[in-house]
Length: 327
Image (cartoon, rainbow, N blue to C red; front, side, top):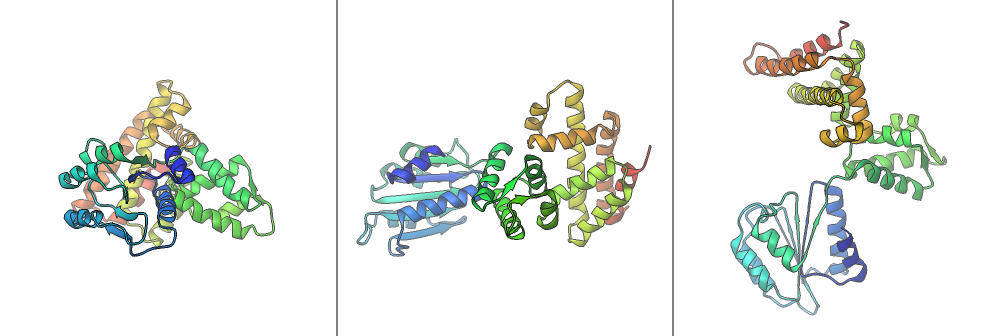
C-alpha cells in the first residue's frame, strides 16, 4: 500500500493497477483516489468502465488502441471481471504491449496469484492487496476519525465498539458517524454512548447469545434469539453461526489446554485479541467433551430440520435451552 500511496503523492503513475483483497472499504477508497488523480475533471470522453463477467476483451483492447482525445491519458476501470481467477490469455498477452497513454485500473475481490493476468499486471504496473486490518490498526484509525472531530475514547470502550461493529471498515465508518452525531457538544465517547447508538452485527449478536448461554442466563439467551428472529434472521443461519461460535470455543479450549498463548490463539482463530479473550472466558464454562458433544448436537439439529423431524425455529430454541441450563 505504501508504493501506491507514493504513486498518488508523486503522481508518477504506472500503466496498470490491480487493487484486490477482502477489505472492500480500502479497495473503494484507493480506487476513488486513483480515479480522482487520473481523471480529475471527470472527463467522460477518455474514461471507460467495465464491470462483471462477460466483458468483451477484444472491444476493450480496441479501446486501448484508440488514442485519447485532447488528453494525456485514456483511463479504463475494470471491476469484478474474474480475469484474475479464470484464464484471459488474449488480455494477458496484450498487457505486454499496453500503450503508454493508457491507465488501467483493475478492482477485484479475489485473485489467483498464479494467473497470467496477475503476473502481467505485476510486471508492468502495481499490485496492491487490501487485507483485513488488525485490531491495533483499526483502533488507531477509528480513534483518528474521532480525534479529528474532537472526541476521545478509552481503549476498553474502543474494544466494546469493535466488538459491536465487527472489523469491516465500511461498517465501522458508518457507526463512527452515528457516534459523532450522538455526542455533539461533548468530547468523551463512553460505553453508554456506544450501547445507545451502535448497531451490533448479527455475528456479534450471536456471540452475545453464546455468552448468555455460557453464563446460564437462559432468559437473556432466548430474548436475544427472539430479537434475531424479529430482525428476520433465518433460524438456520442462526444455527450455523451458533455452531461456528461453539467450534471456536472448542478450539480455544483445546489450545489453552495445550498451553498456547493468548496472542497465538487469537491468530489461529483469526479474531482480535480482545475477542479471543471473550471466547476463552466463555470456553472455561465447559469441558472439552461438552463442547465436542455440542458440535455433534448442532449437526444433528441441522439434519433433523432438513429431514422434517424438527421445525427450524424450535430446533435452535431447544439447543439454547439445553446449553443454558444449569448442570
